[in-house]
Amino acid sequence: MLKRLWNIYCEGFRHLPRWGRLLLAIVLAKLLIMFVVFKLLLMPDYLNKQYTSDQEKSEHVLNILINKP
Image 1 (cartoon, rainbow, N blue to C red):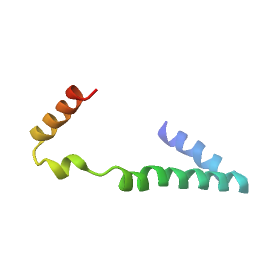
Image 2: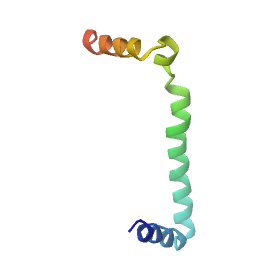
Image 3: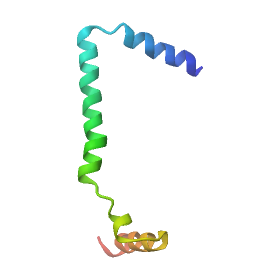
Image 4: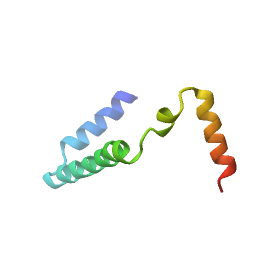
């Protein structure tokens, strides 16, 4: 079943017109920017830098969830 599904997608992408491939490349580039670049630049790994054990991390998250509105 997975092989048939893969073949459907392969055939569909193979027969795309030039503008369709360009549009697909733009969409993939946007996804790459959103998920890779934004993750690296805008979402620092705060918990691993501040706390060493899982217990400390979970206590911090619990305190933030309970005490802040």
